[in-house]
Amino acid sequence: MLKLFNVCVRMASTNKNKKSLSSKLAKQGRVIKPTSIIMKQELRDIEDLPGTASSLFSPIQTRHQRLIKKEPNVNLPAKRAAPKKDSKISKIKMGSATIIKCEVVPQSELMKDLIKVEPAAIKTELTEIKVKVEGNESPAPNEQWGEHLANIRLMRSIKPAPVDTLGCHQCADNNADEKTQRFQKLVALMLSSQTKDETTFEAMKRLKAHGCTPASIQEIPVADLEKLLHPVSFYKNKAKYLKQTSQLLLDKYAADIPDNIKELLKLPGVGPKMAHICMASAWQQITGIGVDTHVHRISNRLNWVKKPTKEPEQTRIQLESWLPHSLWAEVNHLLVGFGQTICTPVKPNCAECLNRYICPSSTAKKN
Ligand code: SF4
Image (tube, rainbow, N blue to C red):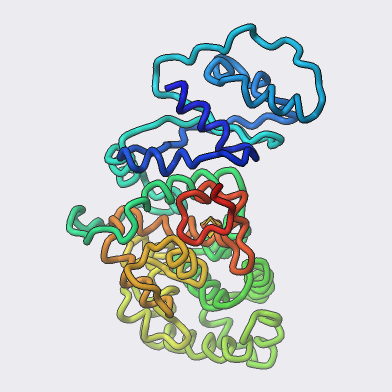
């Protein structure tokens, strides 16, 4: 176990001889499962770790760092502290204020946990989830997907993303009646295509101030609607689609939105990604994975698809063939935020990513 701790410390350091603990464990069918995060400012070295955690580490790294900084070796234990005989380990990034506690578990156990977890992203909104029977999925294209996902969950919990506060699910007026809220969720999704969350959120604020119901959208002249939507991308097309959709909803659905994927897809300007996310957030039904540009790109970078895909729709079909249904609701929100903050389209921040040693597209130095 001592060996494991040393490797773990080196993994987070700049030591040229570092090895990937993740890959070593993966070969043994085991994985690192992050269990909690301790935030601590001004962390000087390993001995600053609170509680018993410090006794889990060898002081080698600290000595090495102090030597580099030409600091005296004060207060070092005469002997290396013996690690406890349990499976808890901790990982620390020197110079960072973030400490992550982990434990080593068999891979099969991690998978069980992942599938059991409630969809965190929209759990407050979900009252009923239609669950398909688990266990009929194809094998995953990348067997380390569970570890990828656990790491992404952890990174998302540390680093907030625009989608958390400005995403489409935050755009509806909570004081409006349910029908209006459903309509506003759909409108936000229609505006969000190829548009930043901040821009969509602001446009929705202007629309709601004007009145955002199918009837009020019908009353407003198209030129004024365009002005309200600008600078949302393709705002002229989106204004046209909004007008057409509002009219259809008034004529066929009593000013509500359809409650099934087939009819949602018939609305002008509504594609599969929007329709599946809309079914989850407006009707609390999980009908498919919402695959946008972030989910598409990250799934390809992590080899979560059997063959590289060109279109988000191809990615959706591949993901749905193997990803357990209980994770479908969560994956869009999780990956969108991860794509906004770390695994960005251009120059992903691989050096900061917890998946850097197990990601096939990582640009971080391996050795
Ligand atoms: S290592 Fe890089 S490419 Fe891979 S998931 Fe992390 S940020 Fe994305």
